[in-house]
Image (cartoon, rainbow, N blue to C red; front, side, top):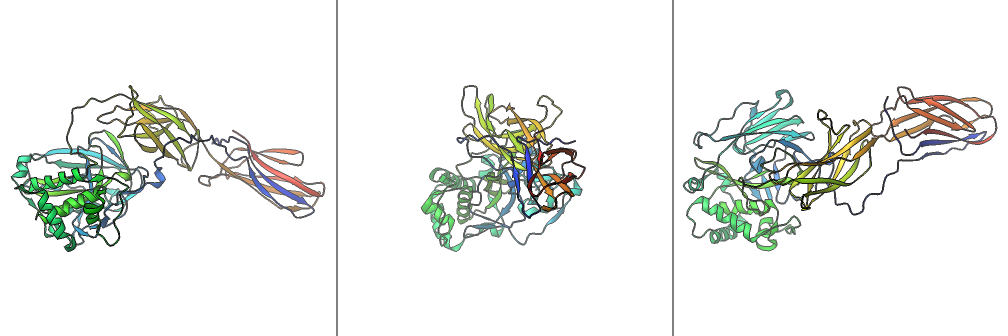
Length: 528
């Protein structure tokens, strides 16, 4: 038998007119909640609002990644060894919009190994990590540069592979995990300086209204450089040093190209501004390049979530005999590479949470993550987990929310899904381990309850002295399912009937009203 808890008795009242017509129905005693801390930080959104890797879009707008925060999209297990994951590459730019080539021929992908380019360096490092969707996804899957194999359940995926842009397109929705294997080429600067950048004709194009001004600027920036690699690095460093990353940038007027506005007016923007400017200026120097629509992740952690606000556009160029090389001209990120650092111990503390979670609704959890010296921790994530027994290592627990830790503070909006059983749980905030921070936990209790809906049906006008049959029902408001075998009470006149709902959550009873006038009939679900 399910247990359905209420803070206050829930009742429905039916006013019955004996000998005359009059009716009124009211629901009383709804669940009360503690007042929330008004100083609680702004929260990230719950799973129900997760978006991002869905649909087969063919283009990306400059500035597209400056969105409101929403819930997690993916879970990544094992270090990716790269900060940049891709969905698809784009060549064609027109007034703020990058478009994927439309004439690409797909190859049906069924898990086969994709051959590497024989002209690339031999024996690259092979890296593997797992991706688990947190919601149903379609469209371009998240992979790495030079991915040469996906390992997945063949019955759950229908995938097309586009070799020219190194992209895997899931034709049908999927929510199963898949493994990504890729080859990591790490050419030296000397090798890149001795090579040249190659590419198809579309990787050289620049809009006519931008070409002259961008060419002048690019030539000024790269004066004194003699090879493609040094020219690209000069362009990157110029953008890093002279422009500001700011999600609150002023958008360009509709009549002005966003990149012209970014370079010569606003001088602030997000990754797609910086790396579009980088790509177009490279092309004016006759260096082919393209942008990649993808996400940034932490390259060195064992477990991490991918959030929509991690959407990112970066650039890449193919060096002859060396492979594709990623370029990021945005000051938000730094070049990839390992660092010798010492992980610090952290302490996670839930400072506030809704004490009750209603099935089918959201609840908030907020708190702090600090070091032993009370220093605020940043650049990590907190996952919120429900467990019946926090000491049972065999119990996996249910992940109900994920959020970022910013300046030592987190606030996560969690989803109490309808399938969660009601009862008492330990609410666990788990600060994930990174290259800088060790993991830590906090685990106060929380109660998950169901919010029932009561209903009485029967005549509102009756004759005195006659037996009248009334029926009642109780259902779970989160999913409309009947609540069976629960105790309900019916009160009318000076009588109190105690009844038990059947498998359909229903009861029936007979009432008799001996005198003319008005009478109230109440169906009550007491605290349990």
